[in-house]
Length: 160
Image (cartoon, rainbow, N blue to C red; front, side, top):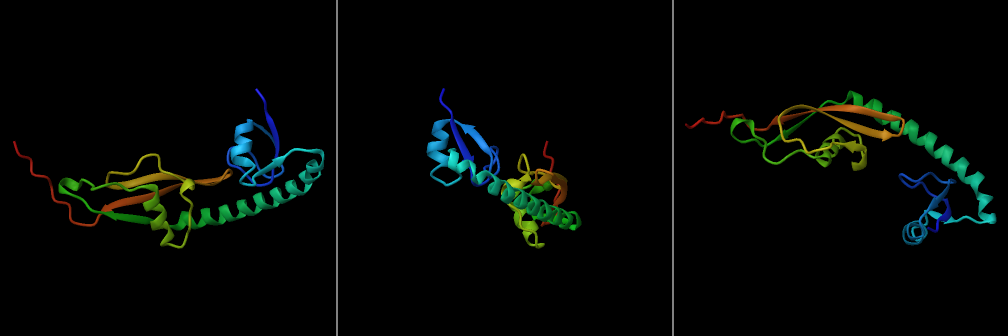
């Protein structure tokens, strides 16, 4: 099976950072990496660019780590409660998703991307919940939040 050798000029998730020499299938290279400008074919002339790309990559990764640590420290001080509509017995109408959580955190001045919040399933119950927020490969934290009812909980009538 043929393989394409490429030099990444931009970081690609689950593939590598700029300056990395990668081997991928030709279709992935031809249809995704090359047209979007994420990579260039690996030639003798391009190999000279590797050093400058590696330096740029190291500087970017260092900067991202510092920013992730700052955001992590801010998130550790934030305590949030998300109010949801409930029915009889405290049954939640709908659910709370990662996007709802991101929007609520943004109200406290911290902007997150959806891919950083790992809420595996939407939350459909009242109470305290925990989710993992992965800001950087080296920085992640467990974030606690609470789901509360915005209207008084009325006990469900048990009809026999």
